[in-house]
Amino acid sequence: MTVKVALEKAKGFGLDLVEVSPNSTPPVCRIMDYGKYRYEQTKKMHQAKKKQTTIVVKEIKFRPKTDEHDYQFKLRHIRRFLEAKNKVKVAVFFRGREIAHQDKGLEMLARVRKEIFDIGIVESEPKREGRNLFMLLAPKQ
Image (cartoon, rainbow, N blue to C red; front, side, top):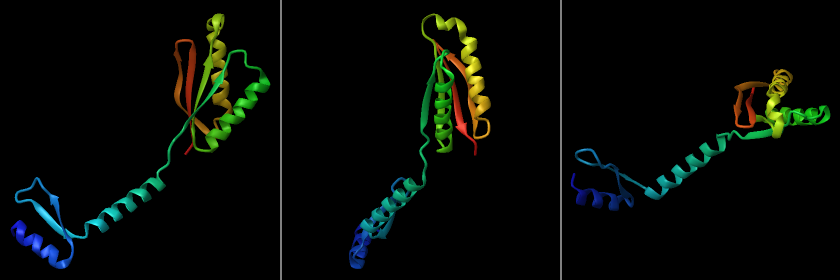
């Protein structure tokens, strides 16, 4: 039908004429309450946003000379983050001449991996970037 007839028909129902598919030949239109349609769309988007979860990456920093008590304290934080379903980026920073002892950093990351195996998995193996060693941990499903 023509646009004029469709507009009159929509006005007779007290609704709006909405173009659904402008690229098709001929263009497809629908008679509907556009305000109600927009309201329902925003409600759907709000519900979808409620259900989605955001994954947060927390970072814990170690040094090669980190003492046992500090190590245990940071390990408890890593466990708490993994239990809260967050990812954890474990980093070992080297300062000055410490860079010569990267094996100590790798040992520390291996120890962290061993101690959290029950609640987390290693998502990315230890990588070296400049003066830092990084490892990414994710919670077990």
